Image (tube, rainbow, N blue to C red; front, side, top):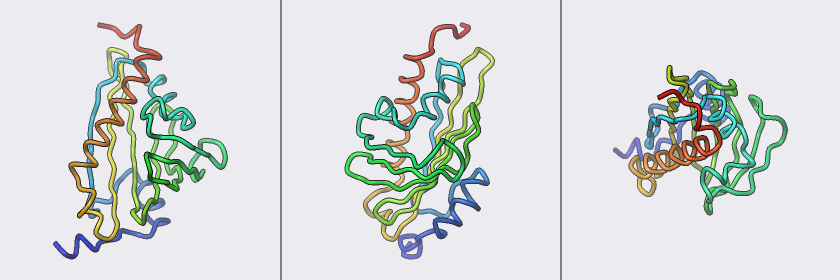
Length: 172
């Protein structure tokens, strides 16, 4: 128990290169969660919602001050604020209509945040969102249940934004 509370995870560069870019989160991290959501909008529309960081406030109004250092591409860094948390991040995987993954650090916690999109036969999208967070004592004040709730809310916001933009036209 103490060992997991003190686990800080891999160095941020290793987390980025050896985890996020390889399509995985840190399974040893004290805080991990995943959620899946079915979205009645084409995968291209869901991608457009995710791939427009400057408009992430339409997914979650607590997100603001998103600043990218360049184009949406692997290794592009960006900063953003989620509520009161300032986060420094870097895109790891940018595969249009398939996956958007980034790593980030805030308050000393290191995270991998993955989005995997799958086209459904009816024209909609299945979205899998997963995240790991590691940092000393993180599990004491931000546990798995809290992360799962945050991911569920984030995924619901993506669904809402995508369905508002492109819901019509899905086969019934």
